[in-house]
Image (cartoon, rainbow, N blue to C red; front, side, top):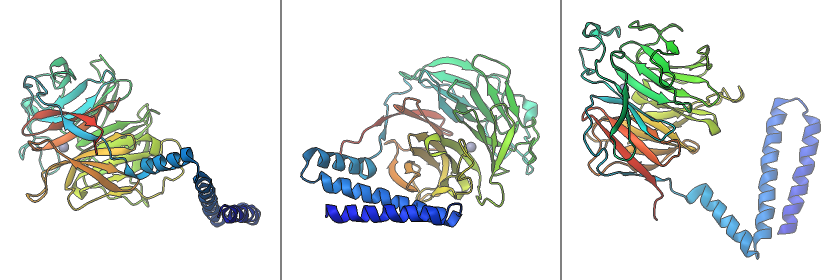
Length: 388
Ligand code: ZN
């Protein structure tokens, strides 16, 4: 057995060398070469496994690597009871993120409510004369008991939506009434970057229309989901210069209300809560190279998924929440494996979700927060290893 494997190995090696000579530049040849390389690695794995038999240690290693690939269940969200300890005085909670001190930060609408009187058909905000929300809209909470540790953002926002903290604790906020996205450095009261024109919905490169969410890469690139009307994602460099629009024809990716974004940098994927398409789709982020830009998006869509409102990345997995879709579909959370384009777990608090709008995962991956609009509340979950 081992001998025939090694013979095959040698044959593939020889074939590979011949192909290299036959197709030095040719792309089709390159593809063939890649296949041969795959065969080679398969052949070498077989050789390893053959040698592993009769060797206890090696067999153990083989079993554990199989577990790593297929059998380990993802960590499950488990509600932290009595959190927050005392009720928060908040309006509709639309955004949540977690800072580098592992404190959750939420974005809420105070006494403003998004209803049928908020916008006209051309997406102009109709209640600007009421002025901005007068109370602080951004609250930093204590991860232990949910008490308010700090508050900010009074008299600035009209209809808060997304909140993202990057790894430097810069605050990225979207306001669907202003049609703008802001970057605030920690402790600063003036935005250091502003995208879009105040109260002016539009589809040009200068305008946004009800932008929903922001993701920021470690390399500094910025992704804005724009949003309820333009159904596009804009990618900028760290200084705010536009790099790319997703989708960019002939690239095919039809989005219907991209509502939240989650970057998986190790996979170079940007996962989108593609709300009205009832799916999560992960096009190439294009962070480290333009190669693979034309690869199709990884797409996760199942009949019970419903309208996906929130997504957050944890390792190579995505945790997501849906919202009310139909009386037949439970409002719940999903754990998604984009690599296999599959849902690997479902979860929800015992009491059930009402109208979850966003979720966020701690930088150290230990906890998750889900925020809801009506009833307005914040959930804390621990992420625990399943026992079975
Ligand atoms: Zn929303």
